[in-house]
Length: 287
Image: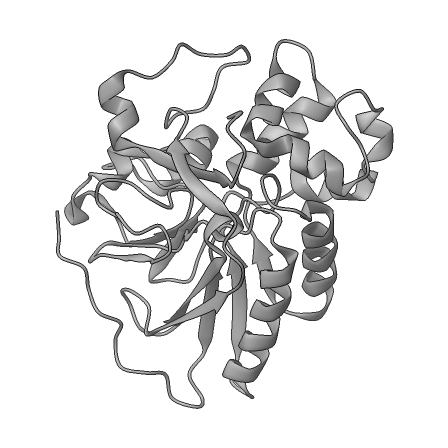
């Protein structure tokens, strides 16, 4: 595996900037502070912001996060990518049968429902604003800037971007994380995996030759990471910004790294459980 790369030299005052923000998971408090930090950092330079998906579930205020992002897109050049948790939420609300609702709740959807004043017995389709559902359904899976590809989870190694499938964009882990730099067309900026055997500290980004992992498990660690890229310079970030708030989580075994089936899948093997991890709010041992 390539050695981590250090951020390049800092941006100049006039550099065009891209701010890539890792998984939010309901931490409205951190997103508000991230917007303030970007406002101060960017000054008068041209910029755009890319959120890498997973705005809902696990954290305390998913509804507030979506409201803020929808408003921010009206004022700033913002791209919000779709994450696997947005897809799980849409499936659970529109087609709750077949285990979809149960699976979403296991992934932290209960916290999302609480932010809307609902529970699993509520009228979900009627209780969640239709504009929120339309917004999530219309989110793109990937974007780029000429030097980098931005995506929630990652890419299938050795496969051109136009031949990737939606489930890969949302769910891939192992094959992507262990791939070589030569297997990708451009530097990949992603989230989705806050901790694995190659990234032992969930609160720090993963900086490699061929990819930047900005997921620092904000909902649990209290750290929301922002990778700052010079839009005219290839490669990894030139700066890293971190918003630090209250840590409220602990490490537990993560679900499998591919898209879940509509019904619960068999438990992971002991070997897989030792290698792949996720984080849940402190005191929550239910998933």
